Image (cartoon, rainbow, N blue to C red):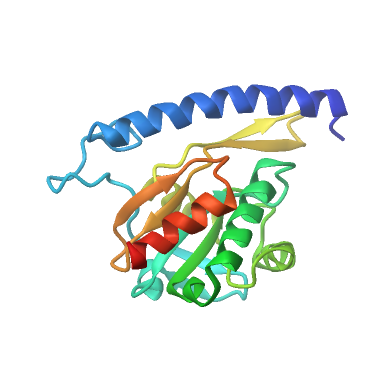
Length: 207
């Protein structure tokens, strides 16, 4: 088992690392580059998103095409995350509640970066604690890796013992807003309040 002090050290290091990643990513997007540092498409859009095939919380194989027609909110994380992921999902849940009927215009996807532990069954139980419309996605290691690449997500296994049995995941913490056509619209950084997120999502249809 992980000792409490080890948890705190890991979280402290992760916060510093992820803060730098967040600032760097925001700069790259604002200057016309993708989160990986590659140039954007000729339209000026960041090269984030694309085809994926995953397995949802009901053990159904789905692709990106299944979510066309609605704006997508895409959030990557894992169920063993001690702090950041549940906090992010709670913010999303509260923002969706504030949207009221307008929330139906959005499909929120929680994509695991830890498919070994996050089976569809585990995701289904885990997401019971959050907004009912949040859809969990897992799959094989290869399927999940494909989605991670498509969304330019940083994700790395961080072992917490010398035997490499226990582990956590270091990862970026962006919430991606995708258009009804699956194209990248914008991203939100970790730490946004439910009120600000709800206001930004309302603006898509009232602004």
